[in-house]
Image (cartoon, rainbow, N blue to C red; front, side):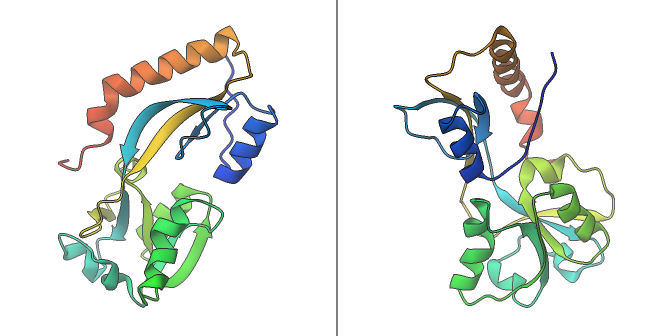
Length: 185
């Protein structure tokens, strides 16, 4: 089985699903159930990836106010997580220095490793990085959870390979969820 995985914005994914350019997707928003069917996969939270030499790395939790005037790197405004990250800071009159807006989480983590910015990313991405130069910190009082869903167009017939991959993915997440999303590491 050959997988073609493309990372793009939620808006682009929805458009491609509606036009049936793609049959399936993993997305953060459950879509209109008349056109789409979806299965819950897992939940995750935003977190901060901070270089160990940064004074904020010594704090147990990071408040949003700690990010005022701090250099940050994160997903760009085309992503739904932008609202839960940067836009929310600006609304609270917190003004970080945006060093990087990207689609690439490895660049976000690389900026933190090099102590060029504090990275804002999702916990499962941060936990999958093995760098000894960074620490992972939760936001203080941020209970916002991002849910991930497997989405299919109701009018598309999935191939046997797509059905097989869906089953594999759902089973794999069920078996590995505790290891992937554990803040007690």
